[in-house]
Length: 149
Image 1 (tube, rainbow, N blue to C red):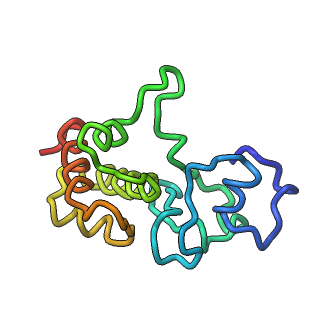
Image 2 (image 1 turned 30 degrees about the vertical axis):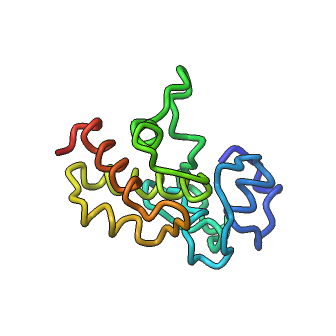
């Protein structure tokens, strides 16, 4: 994760470590209780709620945040990120990092996901702005650009 383990207290959540220790503020904190999904990141490719996960529990796991999706050499956005832009999959944007990471986990494990699969995969991510229609549309568009359906 790019930090000395001495910088992490045993009670630090992953969200705290990412935001306050590492400066990766793309991970958002909404409810701080694991209910809204704003803090979703990937641990070894699986979505987890970083607000209720202790950093100390994740030794040896690969953590992916929204900052880690773009191509580091070119800065080109990941196809899911681009699809959210192209398909107006966000309004305020607060839930967007968690939605995108939940979508990435789904499309990595099931490249030809159905609309029902998409809705189930983001069911733990609360959006108060969009009504989910353009979010689902964005994820399905990303699926096509990644070679699915």
